[in-house]
Image (cartoon, rainbow, N blue to C red):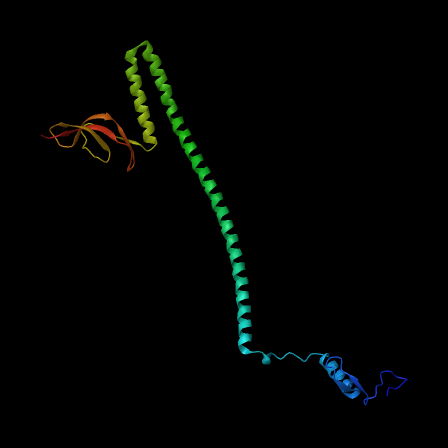
Length: 213
């Protein structure tokens, strides 16, 4: 029987119907089942890693290592991308500076060459002016202009090639015609003077070459 003063004080001899199984159980069995349920719902026991499957634990560890390596590779890749971007920017800046320097040098060289040729222009103008009144004076004036141009070329590092009597050299001369002569491979006539700058040919001399019969 139940204590009328305490409804929770149940008589262990009484029986009742289990709601889950539909079987008849005593109050004592029901109280014991409730106590076991409370124990199961209580605090979980401490986790023991030794109870894990070693193969599964090794697989988890390997996966974590791979994830860590992937993170490291991603950081390294981002770092390399940043370096490449900076290098590309530096190269583009260097290319622009080099192009600008080359343009400035070319313009400066052109200006210097033009400045050196301005006196020649003045001499040609004077020679033509004098030759208009007296044609005999034109030849000395033009000879003076020619000498001044050669002098300017020498200052620029150019030297003339192709003179009558010098040996024919295909490196500096272009033979336009071969004629009989007393010596082989000798320049006997110059149609156009050539110019060289050191060992670099600027323009070949166009010449006539002699050949023994």
